[in-house]
Length: 418
Image 1 (cartoon, rainbow, N blue to C red):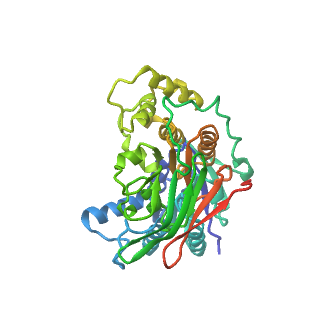
Image 2 (image 1 turned 120 degrees about the vertical axis):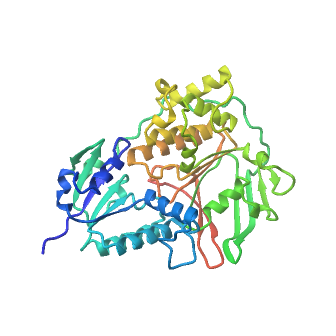
Image 3 (image 1 turned 45 degrees about the horizontal axis):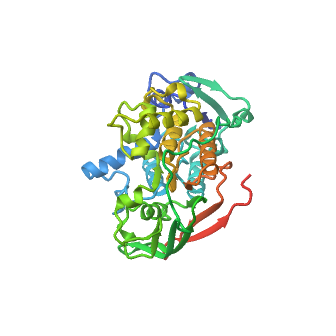
């Protein structure tokens, strides 16, 4: 019996991933190394495929992935959604399965479960893993390529994939135009905070004190309540009312507005990129961070222009100040969005999964930038990630641990990450 061959195709910012996927799923235009797939039906396991199913469910009440449960896709964790999609695809009995970064946004437990399932089907389904982070490589894959633009290049030595040394950003982090004045001992305080949605407990007696200038990593399994916790900090969750929470020196519910909270915060999550689909120059993108606006609709001051250019120089992108944001690579977009969140040196910077979907080199650049911003400013930083970024230099970790009564919080100090 011939052993089934499996492939890994390593991606970077220049890879034409969508074009490659379309080739694999075509009957007539298969890439040369994959001619053996001719005649086999293929299936795509990807975030975009999941988004399409979610849209069908929301707009047309068509529950293709969740027909056996009353739960909606939107209410599921990332791990539950991906398991539902995989089960659905396997019911079609595909000859080959394209996995587009299958472990993105999954905690380590969910990753292990998914790997077990994939190993179990690897004896009868051809696996083509599209991969951005080398640590995600499936152990049963033995054929390796790199996709450079539209060209497949064979990889004979996996050690050549080790990340290049991260570049040093030139110069110091630029000073803000105005400094936030803050005199309280603590920035954020959660005191025995519990949250439940209807009958489902989410958070249980959370105690977390964040002081000015600290650098935190927030972790926890899918569905552990990280989003709920963050939304209480940003003022977006009404569940915070009535709880013993202090935000920027003021007890929650004492008459403050949402704007009173948000003006102190710089925030970025990859989903925000979709808001900037117009013709926004990099210069205007950064200045809009000073104004907390989506786009720039006023003539900027000379001081604002100068500050934006200083940040672009730090990134080595000063020659791109008039370039459009949507023309940048994914890694460059993330750098710009992190700077946009930081440009006013907020009291609190929240970066929610800023490295999700990036290749190793781009993720290392984002982490290096975050480390630099935290070290060279008074801004408190919370870095949220399912993935352990080996070079992240956070001082402490706040980990949410699931229990039957809701997630509890655990604080640990980081002595040495490397």
